[in-house]
Length: 102
Image (cartoon, rainbow, N blue to C red; front, side, top):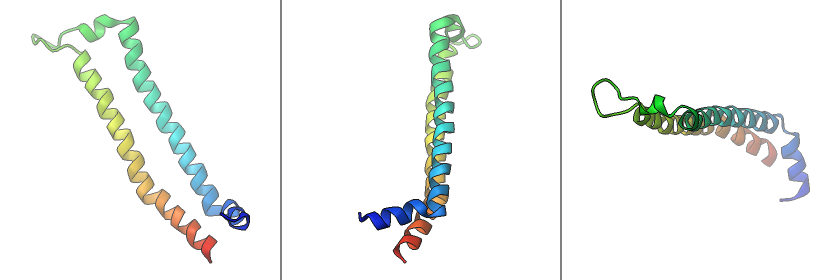
């Protein structure tokens, strides 16, 4: 890519907004995922009995739904990012592309 185009992209306010929003969202989602995942691992490491406790009279322990919840949370975070990227981020990318190619 030619240097002039790189400079035009970097100077575009829509590019700066895209970069800031995508970065901010990425860090928030990363932090949320780390809290959930490491919280689950910490629970396993420091208080196994909580996850080993049976739910009512069944043979299912709390570890199964909590572990399943971690997986569902991961899918939800990914889906949220994809929706955000396909709407807001793609629109900003298109605005940058149109501005630079003028």
